[in-house]
Length: 126
Image 1 (cartoon, rainbow, N blue to C red):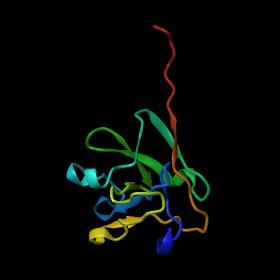
Image 2 (cartoon, one colour):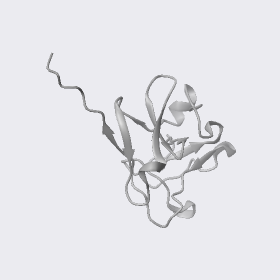
Image 3 (tube, helix red, strand yellow):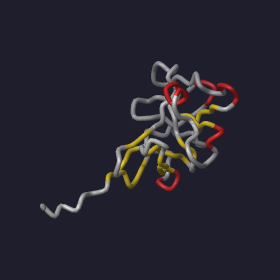
Image 4 (cartoon, rainbow, N blue to C red):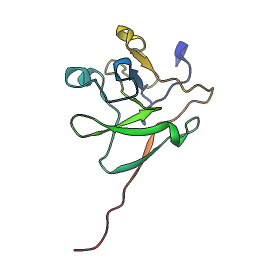
């Protein structure tokens, strides 16, 4: 990942970012912002988000966006990709506007993409 070190990536190997105005709360990047910075989302009904090496289940979760979709969070921070990153390993969004930053793993292990577990349905057969 060049000078940014080991960072979180999605399943396609694209770098994940945090948006400073989000803090550890509600996603604030919507509308045109979300076109440039797409949210990392998971299917409705997802109950657990897990990651690979370097991540603990306690660090990953979800938050509900204003449109009702579930966005993945890392330590409470909503996660995004950047539309100007064109290939795995790009981190062109690092520091953009002084408010967009890569999510570093805090370890030498390169964490892999978060994965999900969906809630099962009742299966009553009605």
